[in-house]
Image 1 (tube, rainbow, N blue to C red):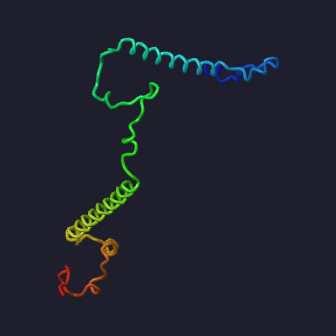
Image 2 (cartoon, one colour; image 1 turned 45 degrees about the vertical axis):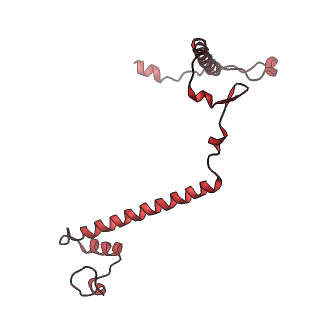
Length: 160
């Protein structure tokens, strides 16, 4: 019976709007909006508290060699200029073209490997191939029928 009680339509309670006298103050903040804002505020507050305790407990004599090269401006760390502009535009363009050429080289190497594998595999199951498979295989290799290849009999490359 409890399942029937849950199926009954219930009245939806609506939150009130901002009264007309307070309209100049903007929209009335709803509870869910307040909860989101409060949680965000407390999360930031806790983070600041952790940073303050770390700063209080830090060793003032602490030193790292990386500190020698760091620069600050009004207490804010500045990125080093030579790191941000490490390469010129021409060097970047050259690197991109080299990358494209490298990818093309690797693609051609893989194609050659695949072609070699296909060449070795054509002898493996020659008896069990159907006509459709042979014609498809011939199309991928660029070979025609036996008549077009010549009646050399060997099935390999012809010598000239």
